[in-house]
Image (cartoon, rainbow, N blue to C red):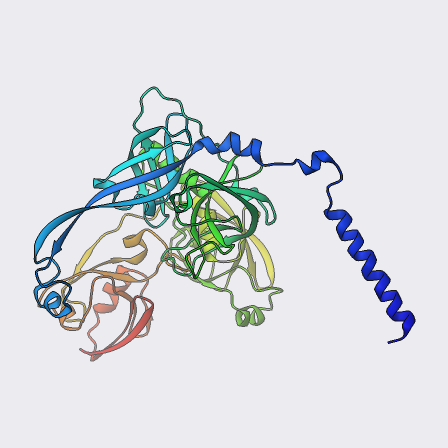
Length: 463
């Protein structure tokens, strides 16, 4: 390298360092005094600590913890004893009459437990559970305090937040007292790998630690945009990846608690699959995004909207859809009775379809009898049995085994409640009507595809 070139590079580096230093230096005393304090004073009184105390009955074995005797006699043999079990979390007051939103896991088992809520000003009140949902990990409490008016937070539209927005997380980590941490929105539409249900989270790098669960994630307008729910960590402490349930979904849950009506999730009537890189290349897509429609239930909402297999849903009501969890979230926050406009890629062209948002028909259980493998099984349509979605956000397809009669053919073949019949003799089973039709024709050999957990097992059963 020549001396002149080295000199030029040195000068350029010096200019860049000087520029960066100048940009990072406050230009005035007012800028040096910028603070979140006014925002914290306005919002912190609405964030509370939730204490749950429950009685746990256990048996003290005369054989101690010897695994041999425990396996032989069982875990409920011995001297009965009660002990008190305590848990601590956070919550957010969302109405002046004392409604609180928190995580379900904070008050888990709280039906027969004592729940106390401590406000930021140290006052304490009893509380009772109004509504809880394990899959959403949300619960609504009501403070037992007549004629009181409480400081509370208003909701903001969580769909309007963007990556990079400043946020504050308020809660009670580790039980040390109310704590405020700051950060930014680091990602949207995140899901947890260990979640059993389709999830859709706001991700933030604001420090969230154990005890923050149920606390508030607020924006710079002092409004609630999320309920802090979980962290992604190997050590159990905050490592810059915190997850919050979006306020739009929280508001749907709160409205359900206030009205006393169960949440009615819109029924899509379609089985979905992720768009992989191979699928994107095969369909000549510009990027790997969206949700592939794998199958459509006849006469369901998706069929009425005109969706067909191989369609790719890339948006809903103008919002981009990256995966099935995102699509499920958009539908859930709109609710039953409305309509959604889907943006769909078909044969390389984008089209718009109107999807009616309707509730799934009520489930009907059927007892199967006859000379076939399912004799003695009580079954129901899967989507109607669960009224929910699987981990990919799809409406489940197939037939679920609800019960198995003792001594029946179904029991002898090893069928269990929860098994899902996917195919019979290589024919797809979409519902009970399909299964009953297929079972009417005697077979020398029944070929069955049955899903148990995450695995699909192939079975061959003589007729």
